[in-house]
Length: 214
Image 1 (cartoon, rainbow, N blue to C red):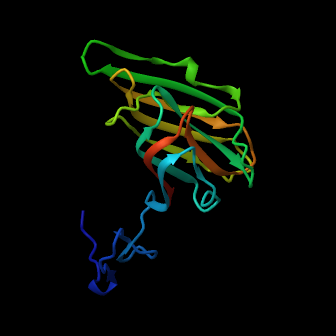
Image 2 (spheres, helix red, strand yellow; image 1 turned 120 degrees about the horizontal axis):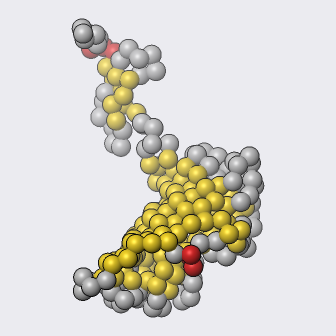
Image 3 (tube, rainbow, N blue to C red; image 1 turned 135 degrees about the vertical axis):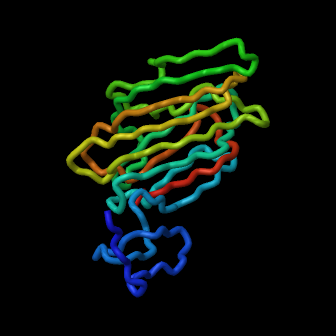
């Protein structure tokens, strides 16, 4: 198969930060630009003895998918659930109706205990409580959790709002616990805000980032 020639003058590939080389709109040359699936950082928040971390802007119809990353989140209290909820408009009740699933894999530091299974205590069936993302996080000096939460098409006024999360935590019993939570907000009203917290006590420290997926 013969290769098509590309006219040097049709190549506009001046280096640009966070860009990739792609075909131009006419498909007859190359240029730098954003590719589908690129992450656009919208907001960063840093917890410091914070009761909650709330994202109350930047969640709109601009993107079909939003990603939250929570990094080295350390609780003030021991053995606590890490949770999130969402709300609509300018409401701040954070009590949207959720149906969700939850499972996890566990391995302890002593190599004496492993587990893989569904955790019914962390799911909801048309509940309005905060949804657990991780359970029994320890608060030792070196203990923290990290993870990612995806929220899909939050501005849709036709469909429910799906979410999936994966979180690895330092369990209070000196275990690595990999938690998988997923579900949907059972509303056709646009979701505009998201809040994170621990079930009890403050978020002692941690970094929270919000991205839009282009």
